[in-house]
Image (cartoon, rainbow, N blue to C red; front, top):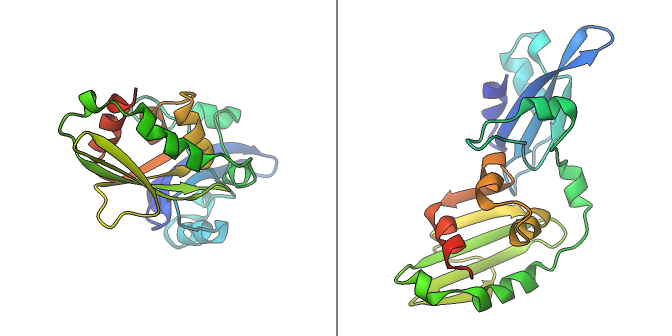
Amino acid sequence: IENVISTHPAVHDVAVIGVPDEMSGEEVKAFVVPRMGKKVAEEEIIDICNKKLADFKVPKYVEFVIGLPASAVGKALKRLLRAGEGIIYLSDVEKGEKVNVEGIFQMMPLRFNKEKAGSWEAVMQYEIYGKSGGSWTLTIKEGKMEVEKGPAETPTSIIKMYDQTFLKIVTKEIDGVSAINSGLMQIEGNEADLAMLGEVMG
């Protein structure tokens, strides 16, 4: 079931569990993590399953989430999904409080450690979603970091996440590896940029 749902171009990750049902005993429930910036509807998920799966395997329930509770190796922890733990619904994030994303980006060069950066060069484009969304670019070159609002022409990496996730990473409530493993952060391009950024921020 998960493999079929994963074929949808707007799906980043998915986990499927069985949930109790009064009529049939058990029904299928899918937790879907959409690709950042892509839209997908419940009907599309059910339609793709109807075309490729037996009726009893088609999810009766589809929940859209920004990430899945995951182990250190990125495997979805279905026991937590069954218990209703570690789930952040997409609808909740979209209704969440505003985050001072721009202020956080403007502070980043002040924490930049040029000695640790050495000769590292990168152009990191951040796509932030949610009420405080937008694009920001970090350019690291010759021991300096510059921040610009807007997308980069030729980024070495594109990092996508919701504003609430960004705040949790900055305040160290969650770490970058956990955010990637759970799908809370999605990266295109050079993933090593993110690890290096963690090293050079004081």
